[in-house]
Image (cartoon, rainbow, N blue to C red; front, top):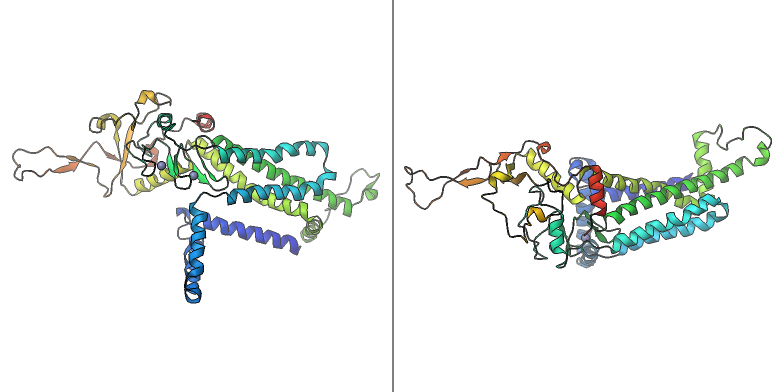
Length: 418
Ligand SMILES: [Zn+2]
Ligand SMILES: [Zn+2]
């Protein structure tokens, strides 16, 4: 029992700390213990460490740690990817030989595709680039229209010095603007973007399948071991109903039997437990991406929509009808704002509204018509609120231009590659 409890406690605590470290700063956890733990982890503990180090070595240790941390966090390096591959391979090397003699033919047949698929999709996800280059910049500009909510024309990447295509984002790790950037994924040491979204999703599917398979195979094998040990076939030979080993056991006895068989067959047992605990994680990521496909957005865009929601609640979001304000904001040069008919996106799906956020909750201003009688102070231009801009009251008033419905989004997300 103590073996199973220790392994479970260690894995669960590591998962919890990783969860807090990654997601603790999300607004949903504000004023909760999770946010407190996040500050403890990223602020108070490091500060305490630096204070101690200051006394002992004059901050020498913390300086070199900071350099290492800076490298790990801000440079593209394959350490996590290597760890990911090792985790899979070591798990398989432990599990498969130990279970080899007991596999049925059908269990054996499923093994090669399930083992190889994650590695193949990992390779494709890691090596397929969605980076914007001088060569593909024009086609990136034409892939999607500007929606004038999340993406406005006229913005230039200060690093790449090119106009930012709709749905793109500069990645400081990949050191490039990335087409339809979703997020930078440290597991694949690459950005998830327009060209590898298919491979990334297949990686999630295949990893979830492999983990589910490993967990259930491990369960079947160890369960059979217990059956063999506790109810030898000789005992039930000739009886109509074969007895299960766990019949009439208390929960404690049941747990003890499992702890015994896991420590007895630790290779299968450890891999089974790791697979069972990480499978929900892979499934969770996969479901999140199915949700994003359903909603017609990338991870990057879901954060931008979150910002709009807050700005709408704060009353600083305004919108105007495109056709009313186009005259005061004429189209930019074609390499900055392509003509609508050149954009490869369903012709009818174009921005109808122009969204802006203002600092003070006042609509954007326009120059007031000078009143002849009151023209006393010459040279000073009076400004007044432009009534074409109307306050947005709810996110429901805003439409997502990139949402073509689930199947449209699925086809676009997976197969519209540059
Ligand atoms: Zn850039
Ligand atoms: Zn990246």
